[in-house]
Length: 126
Image (cartoon, rainbow, N blue to C red; front, side, top):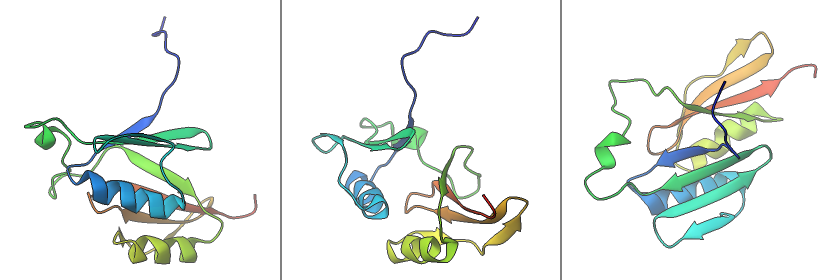
């Protein structure tokens, strides 16, 4: 049957809200499309809305990525030049694991300053 819904988007809980908004603003080269003071910002991207929010007081642990656990949610960004994307993530303060070959091209796993994983994908032949 399924649930009735009118939209879907990804959200990142960031304890250091200003740092997260600055990171994604620089990554996307734009200011957020929506902003509610220092607690919510959203970027309306092609086919995706990415929201960043400050968890309520006492609730930050529910959204923190522990260093001993892999994150289950990934933000995948298709990029035309993997090398340039990797350099930009590192310049912005993120970290990137070495790129690797995938059946559809090249990929690299990157992490924002809060430890959320971004999968950078450079497609080959299409």
